[in-house]
Image 1 (cartoon, rainbow, N blue to C red):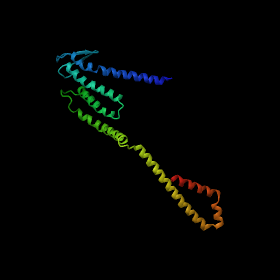
Image 2: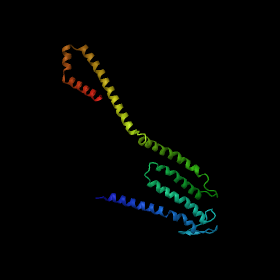
Image 3: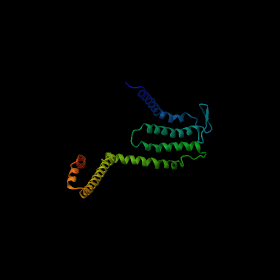
Image 4: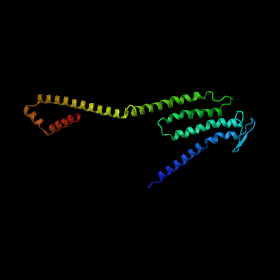
Amino acid sequence: MINNSTSKKAKTKIILESIFVFFIAVSPFLYKFYDYLPKEPNETISLLGYTIDNGGFHSVSVYFWFLFSKIIPLYLMIIWFFSSKNWWYHIIIIPIAMYAFQLFEVFSDSDDIIDTENIWWVIPICMVVIPIVYFIRIKLYDRYVHGIDIEAMEKELHILKEKQKLKKETKEFKTEQLSEEEDIYKKYSWSEIINRKLSTRSLEKYFRSFGNTLNNW
């Protein structure tokens, strides 16, 4: 049985995707909306209580043609960005930024020249996004084309380092053991040495060392 949380998420997803589908479907009609607007230079329109003039363009029709030629690709790109599952979807940020800056220039600049220097505003975004996408591409290309799995290689290197560390510890242990034996030979008689060698603690120590040696093989 589907729980309430999963059902709510599925419902939200369907509603959101339905909105996306609606705006994609009406995009050609929105683009042609300018044909039904005044084409005379001094005419204005009233929309939702706001009076809209030509915005510095030849007419209201041209003004809306320019706006919608930026707004429609912008929101289509945004929908594409949020719905895409491709590894390179981050690169879509660049055209999104381009259209956004072009719109910003229309509303912020007071001169009659547009689409002039907004390309320079996109360059910093390109400098961030392009290396990220290229890095993702390299990782995927190495893994699926060349068969190079970086994570697997790192894991193997880690195992190799652990083995080398264990060998070093075993070698140090043997060196320490030999040093102890030399001290024993100097300090004790042969009968005492035999008793120490055959003690339970010594035998356990030898078996542990032998087991470590087998594991290293």
